[in-house]
Image (cartoon, rainbow, N blue to C red; front, side, top):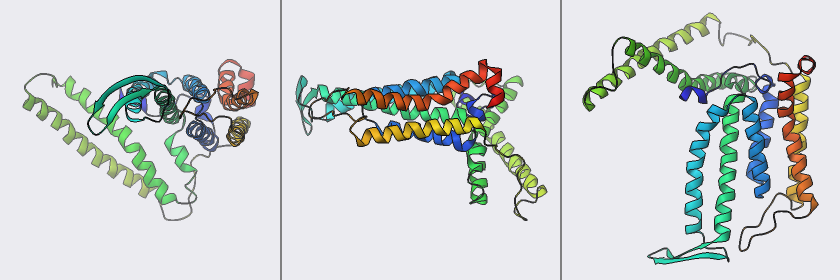
Length: 309
């Protein structure tokens, strides 16, 4: 189950983007999700991230992130109205509680909690998209020319947990084939059975570390100028995605400077639509961010487009 949270090569369009284009796109999504406060903008970003996750066949993995996000959303929506008393539109007069005082729930606090919950789900979904879309080694390879030793260490560290999860699943399966039932027995017996898994995993990890060290020595790591086994080529699709990200980020910043994309929650709720500029900025942001999603659809259904980009 945990294996679905990690990167898997599927040969899809978004996975074939240049790491720079992919990181800029994801960074734009994350930045706008943190900068915007208008619920319409936050909901629009969430819909767009959903389409991007769908385009990389990541809905099963996103479901796991969604469950975690919904749990946190419920907590935010419950705690914020009880703790914040800045709103003027009181919808429920509660009892007095020692230290906290009277627990009055305002419409503004409920609305703010709901909007911030959507923002939280936006951020979680962007990180989910990153895990599905960007190979960790390719992302770190961008910084290898500046600090290749540190990049190598970070690369090994980032792949350690996924590899340990897969190795643990393999060890457990082998033990079950040998007749070990991890569900039977008393608590102490179950602990011993699972402890044996940890011992085997530790030995396997030590063997893997020796193999990595031997491989690095065989490739003369650190003995001279670095060479690259493969290079990430910058193609027209990367330029299109970078242009879309620049359009979305530029439109978003321009909108924020002119009062679009922001929303007033306290002391009274403001207007969602502050003139036609609100819709135009939102349309420009979504248009720029939808370019990779549209190209991904064309990559699957239009061989001619795939050959040209």
